Image 1 (tube, protein in one colour):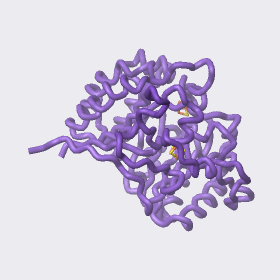
Image 2 (cartoon, rainbow, N blue to C red; image 1 turned 45 degrees about the vertical axis):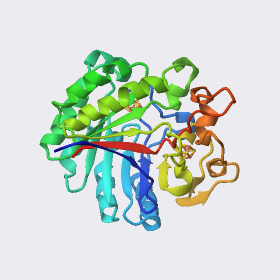
Image 3 (cartoon, rainbow, N blue to C red; image 1 turned 120 degrees about the vertical axis):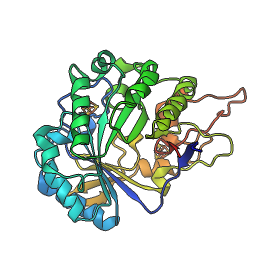
Image 4 (spheres, rainbow, N blue to C red; image 1 turned 90 degrees about the vertical axis):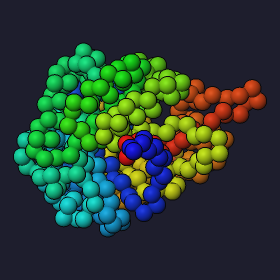
Length: 336
Ligand code: SF4
Ligand code: SF4
């Protein structure tokens, strides 16, 4: 008999994940866009620079997973070459995160043997809600891109970023997914980064209770349809160990201005631990995110404590009720 299998995906000490923003330009202007041009620059990296940086990480970490992002990565005219180079360099998997517009005929220029996943972003079950968040026409383009990628033999995933704007459509979204050619679904929590971290967007985050009431249930419902569903753990149960991915895992978030972070929550600040200078990766001076990872606090994640302290529930003695999990710690739900 099939049952729901839920597991916390611990950080792998052996696998490296390279999140490479090859440009910050995008054709959309999503209300919660996490790109911050002041911090991440506005340039599009030249192919030869991308290749040098990819080469560096392929030597540092054998069999790394590569996630290509932007902005919108398909706006880069050499994306297909980037993908081929990464395969030649031995990257274990290649994923392209896209808003669905699939510029430069990317599906015709790469093969399912070269790209493990095209991952599409949709933020509503309905056109009205999604387009209100992501821009007019984006719902239709995302779904048509998804169908095209699937017909061309690529594996596809969907990303739904939960906020107060769209949590009420999560159930309807899980029903819509039933009819889509999608292998995996990622439910993300909106972060206080980029536009969603700005004063104008105050209050986009959902409460812990809303999250716990709705997200695990929607994840199970999609898992029962045969999808693999992944969502952030957010809080730890009493007794569950806290680990900071910045200390125990190998994740790198690379931006086109050369900054390289290990923690996505630090991306709105000049706290990057590394930076490419003349195509060589150098450590940045103190204080950087690496110094923050070392702090041991009762709340768990230091960056959450610093940038969103209002989200932490405390008891009458002033102790946090739950530790905040690392934002990179995920629950994975499937029906086996
Ligand atoms: S598609 Fe992505 S990069 Fe483009 S505006 Fe939306 S969130 Fe930002
Ligand atoms: S989210 Fe928190 S726990 Fe995770 S890497 Fe960043 S600082 Fe560390």
